[in-house]
Length: 358
Image 1 (tube, rainbow, N blue to C red):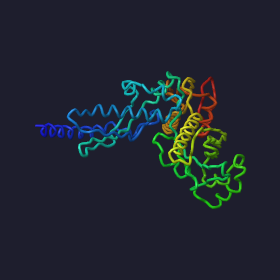
Image 2: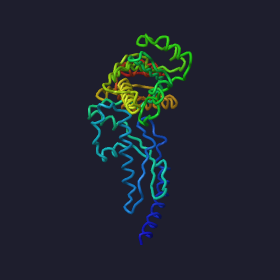
Image 3: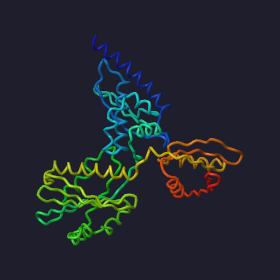
């Protein structure tokens, strides 16, 4: 009897799979544009039992997708504000979702989901929680850690350095920074050794320029009696800053404690990157822009608006036989909008409080 019940459930599950495969054709997120936050490859597995309920599993996927989004766009200090967000609210912010893959192996059900969240609804939630999120912009950065042992008056570079060897061994999917570590170049090795007494003032430009990356972090890790001080030379968005961090009672000669240092530094760098790109959701200015009624021009303009993270919303509010007039809600200053448009090779002329695209 138990075997028959399980066989019946297998048949029902197979029919359900076929039905969902058809649904995926109609509800794919592949064409969702930048008005959404897209979270891919949420993976869930659960035993197949008599009380198996696929809706509950998908709901768990929604929760995980929302958590992943929060980890990607919200700084650590604000993430707790969103810990108890109800499932019903999360589902109300989902634009669409697709089942990327599902399979049944050895009585275990495996599901992979792609979920897209409505950006406007997410930003509204952030505003209510007094959170300034940042766009989920991934960035390749040059990263060089150097350990200075003040007890032995020695420095550790490249593969001599546990931090260097293990930095990329435990990256998280929600991390936005992608670290490019240097190769063990003998010339660079000797260059650092020669400047070992002046690392705090040395600019490392001769090494950095080899990797054609604008953003970089040089982490000089001073070790003395289980006291760790890290001088970070950080260049984000063409602005170099120095950030000092101290850790008490941390022995980085111990692998486990060295891993704690790696994890802590990555969190600090992620937060710093987000702080440099945050969206002030409390600032919403209304801009009126006109553009010539040329289909190719309008299509390109709307594509740019969709890709612009600080654009909260936009719509055509009127048109005539010559021009279309857009109302744009922008999370920033007019000067910032002009700068972005200038970088996109657009010129704006203001007439009667309407910005005209040339």
